[in-house]
Amino acid sequence: MLIHPWDAARDGDEWRTWLRTHDFGLLAANGVDGGPPLVVPTHFLFDETGDDDRILLHLARPNPVWAALEANPTVVLSVHDDYAYIPSTWRSDSPDTGVPTSYYASVQLTCSARIVDDRDGKADILRRQLAHHQPDGGYGTVAAGEGPYHRMLSAIRGLRLHVLGVRAKFKYDGHKPVELRERVAAELAARALPGDAGARAQHLRRLAER
Image (cartoon, rainbow, N blue to C red):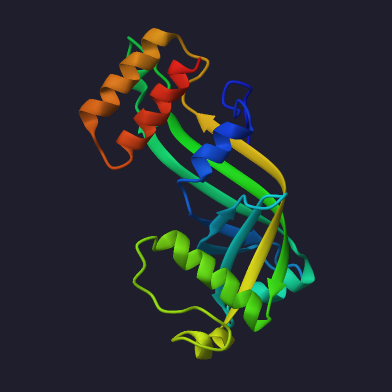
């Protein structure tokens, strides 16, 4: 994706803070034998507990992405949110000269994928994902040899993605005058479509940190 200087993440803390609150994205792998890329929508866990950033997830064993990963383990995990369409009239005093745009946040992680097939490894990934997505509990013991899930582990394969590079973009008119940006924020609040509140929050945060 194109990233202008005014849209780039200011530092690693900005994209990390945003990603900690987003755990659903698109996993893209190169196609096999000249085929198109494979794109898999999936929940994931952003793991910052070790020395390196990792992404943890699991997918069903019949998923066609496995052949692609075995052929080429380099993948991209793309996450986007807080998006809104910004009409031309919000960005100009003249309806004949205004240019519409899109506001959004996007983090793209280039990763090296390692498939996890051993039962203990798969149970560890599943246990950590459940703890993240269901912090209040409501699930049984997750282990390789006991509990309600151990017989189901053969139906999944785990993935550990080692993050090699990050491209982060926060496209919220960072190069425009403060007056225009404040006007857009007011328009987003008034329109209140799905997504407008998130886009407005990011827009105002970037404006305050200008």
